[in-house]
Image (tube, rainbow over all chains, first blue to last red):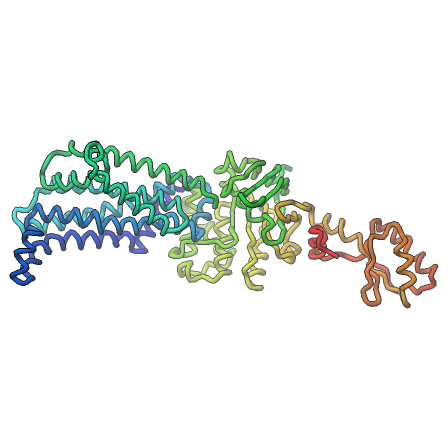
Length: 254
Length: 307
């Protein structure tokens, strides 16, 4: 009971607070600026710097794809954590959730509603990054890259983003403060991003390995089968952290 | 008739303290019940246990026959709850919040609009169009009452509903509570005795997690008021005081200017004996009356902090 009401509330809150567009705007900027920077930055620099920069940042579609994934994984996911971190902690600190939970609503519904709206906002942001990126790449580096592999790569990146959302939701449900939630999420993803460096199964199974797979897929290297294990672990992680968020909220005394 | 709210040996312990100890409460259905106690007595803890926002360390509680732990959702569907400082989503309007609250109960359709308008009228917020973040404290409190009533609850739980309001806001909230009498059970916690005096039919007094009294207001007054007498004689009562202290029915006597204030164990005996004593000493009897205790005095007496 009440899941739809809470879903609507989350939706309108994201809309009216501008939270829905914040991430999309940032991803849009990254999607447009990445190929533009690669193409035109060398031309804006003095001639002696151009060769140095050319060796550091080769101007090619592959380099643009690589750069976009790096930017999204670093800046984009950091902002995603900042957007999600207060989603439970803030409402709890303000006392808004106390009033909601005095009604016959389920905690599962609240966690689901929050996850769905954040996931939708993230998916919208990913599209805002990749579709303009694809168009600019076709113009700046004809013939650009194929759309389908790029979207498959974007899909893998989206799954990784969903893991970020689920974990940050859990951290937000666990901590009374947004800062605590942010620190836990930041620490977790820092640790996660190091796992692929350990090689072997860590590289194959780690959700962070999805980012490398996503880059490869976007450039048409390999098939989706490459990242299936990492994808499975990431989806499992999403389910696990959502369950833990429910448990954390249920165990909290309001 | 079964009580609307009942608790059996309800306890809440924290690591460092006992917030509630063996609370046995029975709130009659349809009553306006005041839950009285000083700050930190355990009133808010009790309300949160009843709403299911906190878990009891031991004991049980029922709302309209539903166990608040095992049948929490069924119990909550019959409840309306107003916390001490209700926090709303500030970007919503009053009407939007009421709609949101109604939908959390699964209420939809045209009846909802009528209920929303009725409640906004009841709490005087029909014309409040702006977002809730612009509301005064009193307006928020009144909206809090409206959202607590949105599901037409059988039991209304109010935590210190008037504590932070100015006299006008307090009067408005108390009038609203009084207007609900008979239709549903209102259980409200407060430390403001005048509020209880004004609207409550029955009262429970809590201190340091323990319940010290649970009576109807009439019974509470009857029990306590009939034990104090005010005696005025026409001349120096020194000798009378000495005689009084030998009487077995006297608990204590206090001199207040020309009056003697007598706390007695047995009122009937005192009423019979006092005129005789005064006459034996040849003193003119000016006044002898059974004095009503104010609720404040009863409260302090129950708490063991009275004179």
